[in-house]
Length: 547
Image 1 (cartoon, rainbow, N blue to C red):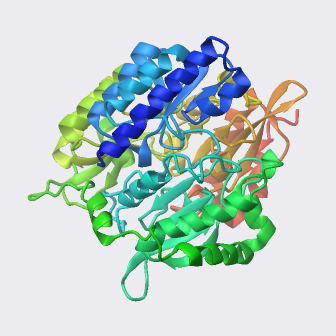
Image 2: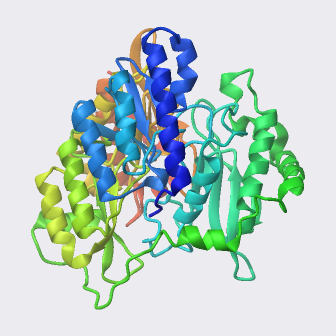
């Protein structure tokens, strides 16, 4: 993993002192909340329904054991004993006192972490495949490139006040586990006809009020040109992005307005002025950054264990992913216990995960876009003790990638933008599916819930999406079908009228029962849905509501 140099350390420490002064001026009335808002946002602090919230950056989702221990310390000391892992591979604390935040930031800085640019109209936390450096289908490790982008983008003077927030993802595997087509800019590592590695560049993806899938901007970008090309694209957006209308300020709207060819032409023109300048990446610097991302190698590999309790074998079958190195596996730690809050982990659970990371995980744990954690490198002979420890801490639910592995935003329980609650609906769905055995029977299904149109729960790209809406003061939920997150990315379609909260879990259960009736042998839910269309499931959704 990357370690801070003197520039990183100085930048973070100076920023803490600057923010400490801003908080003091807010507390004594020298700054109004309106004046304080843009300052706190650039430091990851939101004002939610009940309290301030601090969002901590976890670049490309990677953590060391000592960093996880500090996250546990923050939860125990300054919050209510837990943290919430997000779809942007970050963690947020929902109950800190504003006056405690400088101390929290100092503790983070001690282990090379911060909260800079986790909010505000800037380049946000750069995300990547949570299995990067471990996956068998990987062409190249995406983490060094995400780190290069992090360094370039942190407090970038030209891009600190963009028209709107800006999100970048990097994927180096055959399967797109970073969701590049739902990002403002997505980078896919590809190989050209000459055997050279570079980037396929996608632009204009995003969810929210006007969901869009990114369009291909460039077929092949040479690695040394990465930062100059990103700078050119950001300059075009910064110059032309709509600042007069919050809802039309994202780059996806500009790409719509110019067309992909028009946008590409403007980027190419801007790039022509800077591509051979100071932003060209030296090969030595690329090699230096890569050197921080070593991967374990084994000799004398052990196979996956086949014996053990039934619960352990189910966990291996469901939560273990193949590794590029024989004798190693990647283990998904589900933060989705049946009836639990998706993405939440207690301080005690984080301490345990830190211990497992140190003892069995080559000192690395990852946060996933699905609000789970991953030990990317575990020896196969260590899987049973890892599972045993996780089971004692209620972290061994065997549901990674199944319908009960639900993604949900905090919703109206916390967020002042939300129209409806997400967490209770997610809890009820997982309990209903578990009671009927439907999650295991249905296999690979994604369910994602957002409490408002901002789509922080990524419902647009779920096989089954749930969107909370407000109708004259009552909470209702729209069901969408057919969304997808990865290389087959798609925006789900609304299938009918909204449902009351209590009607959502049984409706989803009926969808899955219908799928089990409709499917061909070994056909996945999303494939059955695409073959038959959403209308085939509409009757099941509303079957018990007619009366």
